[in-house]
Image (cartoon, rainbow, N blue to C red; front, side):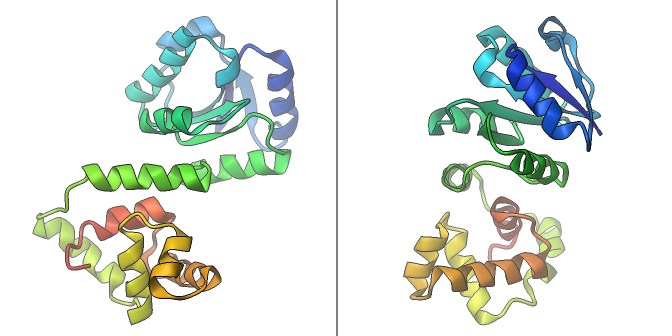
Length: 213
C-alpha cells in the first residue's frame, strides 16, 4: 500500500517520512494535482493545518470520487467541530499532527483494517449522530444475516449491548448497569470477539439490523 503526503509544511512532511518510510512506500502529491487525483489504491495523509480551503475541498472531493480510498486528516490543534466535519465527509482518521511515531503507525494499521481512528469523545458523538439518522431495517434477508452473530452472547453481554446501542459511553454503561468500567470493557471485548465487530460503530450498525436486540 502506497502512502501519499499532502501538505505545505516541509518539516511536518519530513517528520512523517521519517516515522513511516520504513514500513510504507511514501510519496508526495503536488497540491495542484489534487483536484484530478483519483487513485483508490493508496492512503492520503493530509496536514489540514498547512493547506488552503481550496486544497481541503480537493481532498474531500477525492474521497467522494473514490470512497474506497483511505484518508487520514491531521491537524495541529484538533477540535470537535472540525473533527465531526472531517469524519462526516468520509475521512478514515482525524488526529494530531504531532502524535508519536508509534501512534502514527497504529493509526495507519487501524484504518488499513477498515476501522475509524479518532478520539473516544469524538467517536461517541459521531455514533450518537448516526443513531439519530439511521432507521432500523425491516428487510428480513438483511436481518437473517446478522441474527447468528448475537446468538452466543451471554445475558449480561446482551444487557451491555442494549445500553451501548443507545450511544452510551463506557462510563454511562457502567452507571446504568451498576458495574465498573473495567467490567464493561471486558464484556465489550467479548462481544467484539463473538460478533466479529471491529469497533463500536460497526457493532451498532450490525445490531440495528436485528430489531429484537
